[in-house]
Image (cartoon, rainbow, N blue to C red; front, side, top):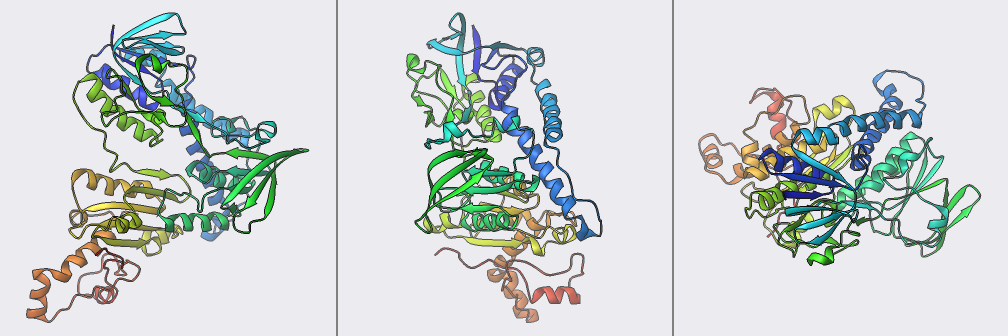
Length: 513
């Protein structure tokens, strides 16, 4: 009998199995896919490689801005995808059956179904027994139920890798992270792209200002975005696929024709065939598996992690859940899963990265807070690289505790990690003010945010009173878009510093009552 049986060989399942094997637990990993096939890579690794290819196309087209003149790029999609396939194979080699066996993990391939609380049947024949089970079977793309879509056919984030050339035109259904990433990618690779969404804005989970900037940015790249569009049906006309929809803005019927349709609107949890009813586990494909704060199902021996939960469908979320499940299922502790500081990113160019609560949430919850803002146009490295689009917003308590942050701009995900680390460690903006950021880097964003917070403290602190009393100094706290203009490296008291004082940083308006 195994100490732990992991059902599902995606990122979360692999991480959990490895953690358990490291401490000497007897571990079995059941993967439905045949040996050598790692489907989880298809959604993660190649997609970001495709984003990088599209970024290079953009850089080549914009090279003349730097005085470099080159021929317009020609995209060979087959070669692009071949490279991504090679990269994926290198990743898969690290998780081959042989590599896992070397770590002390027994790998089985086939479909697992529960027979009892301590037993699963593999392909209806082989029994695998375990003390604890963790379900990590993931999710799959689910095309929307639109009349005519089945006959016309569509791509999704798993099947688009079968393309051999860039489609002349593409309609993307859905404006979430997947839809927005691929809309930008294919527009840069040469497709005429239209996005249809029934939402009021793109990236609806993000701060409304972020959503608005992303929509403007993508529209500027030639992408047509139709919000509040209710698709009535889809028709096949020759080699074109036609989406007929009701335009929510005008109330009129309209249509868009394209060579291909990409559905990026929903996923379903892979819970069928597990026979979860046999052990009293509540689940369905639309809502996923029901678990408590310990990631434990109604069956005390059975846990679940990753996309099958239908909560936060990110690789890093699945791995964080794997670590909690390891503590509870293997070490028999009682550790709760906390999503408070879970960050996420949308890998557009430039990126969007977010953690914690938004400005709107802080206001809705009537939290006393300050809002700090830094525009990329005020960051020296962004000016050097010609990537000044974007901004950072941080919501913090009056004491400097970071409640949330959202960033649109170059290296947004890396910049956000400093804020996430501070949140996890219980550090605030005042602590970050003590950190020296290398110049010139995008770390200047953190320095500017911390400087703005220090200014709010200076307004009310004893030092400010002493400076006014002894020297007649009066700190100037009016922020100009939340950005300082002092030249980096200029000595305090210099003309540059005096100029900065007249534009010194402070909190943006909008703190709570």
